[in-house]
Length: 142
Image 1 (cartoon, helix red, strand yellow):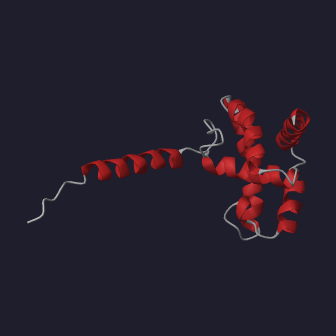
Image 2 (cartoon, one colour; image 1 turned 180 degrees about the vertical axis):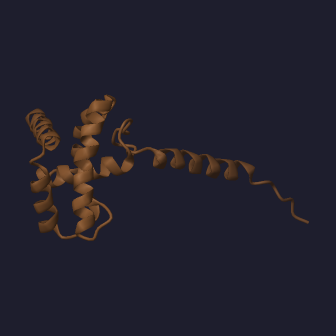
Image 3 (cartoon, one colour; image 1 turned 90 degrees about the vertical axis):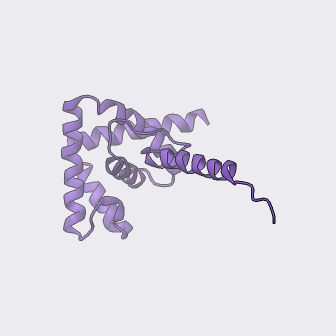
């Protein structure tokens, strides 16, 4: 009769890895990008998608890094209210086009057209300007 050894160390290791992955996935950012503290995951995804449309041809991680200062500014309730108003316009436009959110718009032309219309708002003009300075600053460092 063979002696069965319990596989507790293997099971414990797998549970530990699963727990760690669960924590990482529950954060708004990934392991190599900063987590957002004041923005929801949906707001973060929408801002990254807008950033990609405002300034195409950059790596997604760079957009995420440039959104961190926006996230910090959202600790101010007045700033957050202005951003939420701007994002509600973006979301409304996406929904009128038949999508549930801005990042889901599959037609690049339509998405960029919507982003250009929305970019005329006061908060979006500031966001686009700050984003451009952040991306340009990173290019100078490289």
